[in-house]
Image 1 (spheres, rainbow, N blue to C red):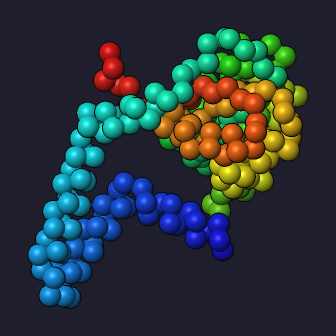
Image 2 (cartoon, rainbow, N blue to C red):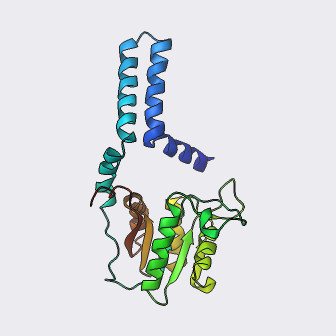
Image 3 (tube, helix red, strand yellow):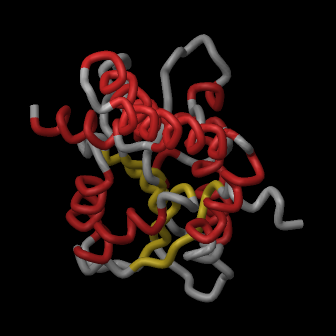
Length: 218
């Protein structure tokens, strides 16, 4: 119950739902209260913010400073583990394996495999539990896709109980202790992920698996 509530609140604070909430609050004030001016201000702010965030150049520029916080790994420190955090996925055995990783998950996996090849003898760790609409965990789907791309199963570890980033950090700490590793997630997610991984005193370097805000950098 608490986890579900946390996910609902977290999703409502994302830019699009938040702007729609502001617009909805403005409409409610217009229709059901005497605060007409406040309602108009809410609607105007929500609509303007929604418009600006819908423009790709503006959205990219807002993301770029966040995504630039952590650089891509540059071979400076060899590690024994590559940790790839879970993301969007589904599972249909009739599809090509990589088609089951959606949104940010496939770039993360690709970066994880690249780092695994750059660190001979290392192991890939996939994290993430079972979504309500699937019977296979996101960690297991990542493992199966990695196998289809040439990573031996014995070089893969799955942590399929964590339901969010905080639990993923705790599970990694329990699985490998203080061993150094590379952490792979979306560039925009890395600052938040490092809050939890640093809190566990985990020795890690980072490598962004997906950068959205740098499309205009050329």
